[in-house]
Length: 639
Image (cartoon, rainbow, N blue to C red; front, side, top):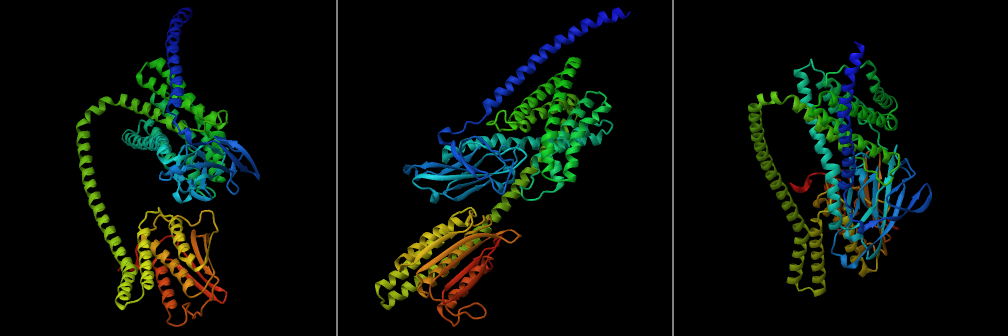
């Protein structure tokens, strides 16, 4: 009897082997297709504008390197590696916008052109996660470019546990670099967000299914895995050296638990019993969580590298084995799709591991999270295959739901349009009022003076001076309308040119000093009426020095300070002329024109939320303007 059973088992084994060989060949083709796809989908960067040869200053030494480059630093925030290079700006390209394009880097970068910072990726927390491959591009202000050779520096901030990496830097016309940036943004920013949103929807559907069918725990397990994946995708950790909560560190390192849960859900979906020793699959993830709760960062990142990533790879191998066994036993399309998806993700995981261990040092593009969409497709296909008949019963309800959603979208769009039109009308009215007030206070008074001088028969030089003052005020109002993107340094650069022209006829030297590399902090809330008030304060300070102080030097100092509550800017204007007497309240003694000018300066500073300090003695006068951390939304004088 036993001989007959053994004889019958031989054809069965041959049959399974006959099924296994084609399946393995197909999986080999999937691996090859995935590798070719990774090569073909790699964006083409504009090599004509590449900046490969640079010098690197790291750990107190400077040496030439070639980009892409992997630094020796794993943790370098206080003294980051600095890459320095040069690029040529052609005179015939003066009317062309130039940009700096960075395809990949880790973990944060700061780019400066000719000593002025134009990009700091740390301002965008989503750009500093190594699994995002987020590109960066920054337009170089025309005022920074010099004909011929220009300097560029890149500071690379690394907070581990992987070593820092900087890809090739590209500098050239924005029109030539922008397509490559948009392609990378589509692949590595937009698509992952779409996939994560799809994963969140899948998590909601699975959770609902588990609530309605609690006797089938597979839906609850799979929904939990999807939720963990969504949390990892959308949770943004604060950038070092800022402290992060331990819960955030734990959730960002939950990938091994997610992978183990997917393996469990696959076995439950196939109707298999989960073995007791299968609990060991969750041990690495629990160790990462325990390390995050006890010690906090950066321990979770280190444990994730040592335990989490190998656990993910082991789970992918298990998934591939489970899918292969299911195909041999059931021969269904859903299991076959799951096996192909597991092979795709496993291939991408191997690719990422080769980058992590620097076997491919110049291929620091992590694609495992992006390829995870293939697994989501397989899971969705399996659910669709199982519940196709049930979905037919709710088609009518789905049609009604779609119609209601469309109606709600139309109503919401109409509501948004009304609100947008109302907000646009309000902003336009406020800006019109501000512009009329600025023209009335500045240009209007100057024109009245010109008319009065003309009627009284004054000499042409006096009228010419008044006309020049009116023209200067008009240029000031026009310049304040420029969109400077919250960067007050751009407006101060224009003011510097005007002030130098004003002081040149009087043989007064203008010294310009920027104490901090970034100059002044960016203020996204900065509005044109803020800029014009600040510039007029500086104009008044310079004018007082010219008219009343008989100064020979004027020093303008700019710096950024931080009192522990956040950064704020400080602008100082000091002259070496003769000072004037001050009352106890800080105003000039008497009712002179200087006293009125100082009161106007204080009023303008108050309107911007700034603080104006004044000191004057025999050695000169010093005006110090402390800018607010956040400029006010409305002008108190608008009413």
